[in-house]
Length: 92
Image 1: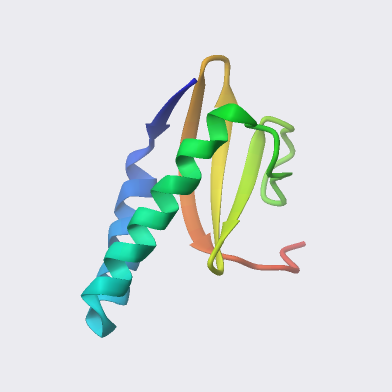
Image 2: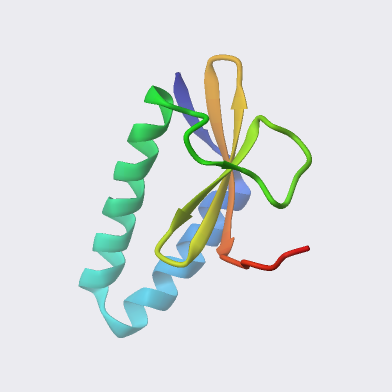
């Protein structure tokens, strides 16, 4: 499986990294590195993460990472990273 990134995800992640970097550049770098390590695991078991609480589609999943929810779509031979936002436990 190939991992693709939507522009909305890239923009949101850049904003988060900028915010973290205001406090510590090293923490921002580590956050980014650790997040991409998680992405590399997805193709091995794409349905491991829970079904998204934001969408009614079994192929859209939520990866919870350090207080953030990363939403991704499993689409044939691709995993499309859709977005990242602060995790909300009681969304509905």
